Image 1 (cartoon, one colour):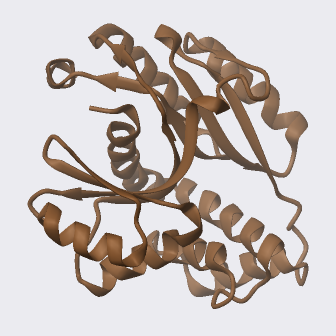
Image 2 (image 1 turned 45 degrees about the horizontal axis):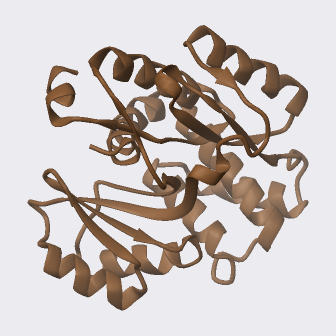
Length: 247
């Protein structure tokens, strides 16, 4: 199973725990601030903000907390000094890793991320060291129990999705990030719920991992994802069905 789809499923389960700890609220709040800062505070005309607010509501964030985050982004309230940062590096087995972060202090975040890589058998790299291996895409993952490939194709392609892939008992739908919200709304309107939906970085090729290496890579990815500033982690690994069963 390709790393991005396997890891997306793990993150989805982790989000339930993160939400109980309040960690997810912190992450989606930063996403709202940056979206409002870049595109204005009106979700009707700002697709990125609309998506961030949708994620916040899915995490049961109160409306007044969402409103405050929007106002921080537009400058109506203090606390909107959050910027986007992209870190790249390598994990065990030579796996390429990319981390999208939102931080209010680069000088604090950089050494913290470097340390997470190092203590988990990885290494933080220089800018553009692995970026060429990935494409930024909107990703939706559906259980084969929920919909058929034909249904997903009809809904997704009509909304502008680019590709539909069958991996194990899941279907992946990929789209351009610019129309992610439109594709998401199309599936919602058709009452076809996705297990996972996110804008992520999909690898152009993958590194096959055995059980031991896969376990180390997943430990590193979870440690990175646990960092408050990390919004998304992508990697180019592949786990065989046999290795996945052992894990």
